[in-house]
Length: 439
Image (cartoon, rainbow, N blue to C red):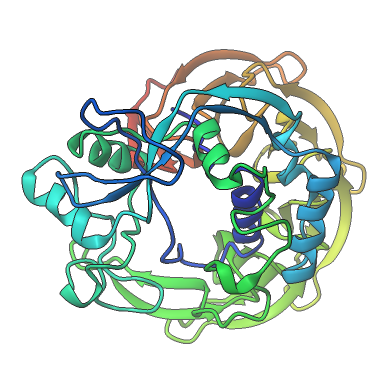
């Protein structure tokens, strides 16, 4: 399953969007899964009736059959955007538009978990052998969280969709559908939020623009002993760091604040030497010669002269209609991965006048034409999207797909290629290593 099941739809998409504005946050201690199941045959229950699932002790609540208007209209989308900008800033309307159009959905009655699955409940599944442990045992506020009996009644976190689904099967249930979850969250009155139609920050776990964050940014790790990597130094960026490329003793870091140019000649004490600000977050960066190529969420591709690291200056811009998420440079071309547009090939022989020479957007998905990252080796581009797409770029004006690989998770956020292998950062599956044959 490639797209994460929507939770509360408008309410949850608001929450998801606010989390997307703060890509620097560790996932909060918030709901990660909810289950649906049908108890033993009994008289038809009524709205709000409860039943305790014997497998893990979860209390379930009954939601009767009915119809509702699923999705968000223009006013609700505008309201979500307004709140996102009010509580964080730098939000985009398109984050909420996949809630449209509004349509009528009819559902049979079902049971749904009353609360989040807890650490204690999930650990029962792990002990049975049916579930894998969460990816992390700590949380954003506790070094010891999962496995610590003091937090057995807290929500389990750091579990993937596949782990949540496995827990549901073990418990004799299943994950709810997108429609079931929105119907349960909206309630009989069709509310915008589970509690009503107005946002109330006291009724949910969220973090706004003033929320205290852990340090984020560039981490320099000593890998001289691959079996025991250790941090040598760090440099804190203004917000989440999305990408980095190193040329000599200079690291070019793409972050929420744009491009940070960092001297790493002393790994124990990296220091900033220059900054190039973008109006939106820089999501990726590549470097070649005297130029840095920045993939910007709002403005597309920026070409920046970094010959003087202390005074970087913009040379040219290639605008994409969707956020540019990743970039690679080879020869006279920049390969731009753009959300909603796929792969764009841009001629950069004249950095002051970049121009598109080809594009590839054959892979249509629920997320439209989506590319998050790209790597180029010889005449082949490896595009990280919903799956991994391998594209022949020998003729930039006429690109063609030569292969693809259906990765296990929802989306691939990055890719690197070395020798006969492609290394794919999969949102659910972690690192996926694929053997490829180079021509």
